[in-house]
Length: 387
Image (cartoon, rainbow, N blue to C red; front, side):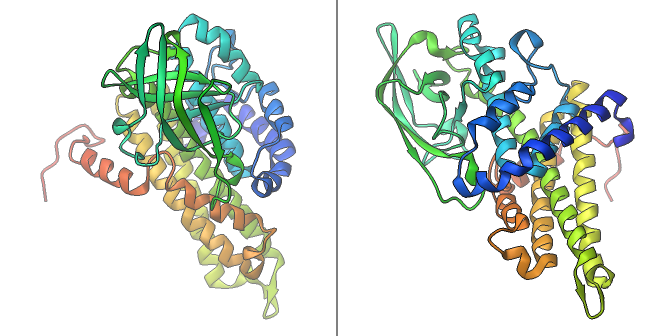
């Protein structure tokens, strides 16, 4: 499948890997331990054009095709999942503003988010609402020329440090999106430290206690919050996560292979032992299969395929479950070194589990894909007789 990449895509992929190794990888451990990304790294991402890269150039973007965007997500995922998550969150919000927002909203936020001057957070999940996104309980009501927000959002990536929040609420009984600035009176942020993985993603709980915002803060129109704004953004996040899992599996494979070549037991390198070879073989196959599946999704998206959303679900499901197995095997290959406090595979192992939860749990994907399987046409395009 990589043979289908254009020369430009291959060159850009190589530049992504070079940048990630030089600037992102050295920051990964600190982001995990200090539970925050450095502002210097965020500015580097903006200067390099990694933020809002799906947008047109007039808004500071790079108009990346979806295959190239996926390759970028793989390299961020290979070096630091927190950075991949940051890029995805910036894209989810900026793309929503670009596609559904007003000219004033675009002028105010797109360039700032793309440069790293403003940090954006996507506020959908609530204490009692996760996968069932249509059931958000945060309320928005019209009061004169203002909108008044009341409710709580939880597990919000970069909510602790965000400058602007894309908030989803019930407005006149309809799922609607709003932009809320951090300094809005009545908005309170509580950090959620000590997570299992993605510790550098600065998750927060955001409370809205009669927050008063201009009615012009609405993104799209009443009732468009879930069907249009959130669904488009979530598809971007799910696609990024799938590719990030490819990068995570690749990082585990590279580290386990290196260690297996260097570590000697019973008079030979452990890579010569068949049981270790089996783990490395499974890791290699899993990482490669995940990449091929994600590449296919990227090609389908770029071609405007009608089943792109479901194929993204399948890629995220496969890649995230694969990343968990690969990370577990990497820890096993490294043994005691794999569970050490300074071990990169230990961090990857913790992050891998989170990937099965964010952007839709494994079980939700299984349910959705199970339903889709009854309607998916045969690749050959012809009917088949049931056996």
